[in-house]
Image (cartoon, rainbow, N blue to C red; front, side, top):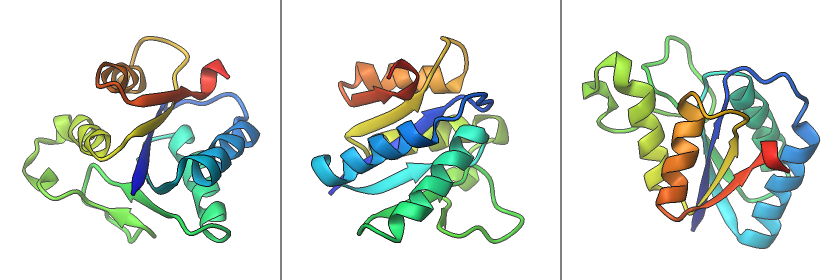
Length: 138
């Protein structure tokens, strides 16, 4: 089973919906991706969640919103990784992102600049020889 996480800048000032949909369809139809992992820390994550929800009605895929912190409200398709409860809060997002990266073969990013967590995890994925698709470069 092929899986794919997403890493993108928290602030997204560009409409990437069409491009994201095209990439997701390619991953599902041509690369056999069946499981997707996405965070919940910003605009990129929100747009990705929305697109995955729409596609899950049309394709046999599963997607999980992987949380870094215990939720205060119920979130559909939420997943709290085992062990994260023992991680100090300031390291929780990093730990969650590493958890997602361990479970994937293909990574989708939206990275425009070298600073921040999205760029860090894009770089880690490349060093681990994962297939990385950066929407900002398409």
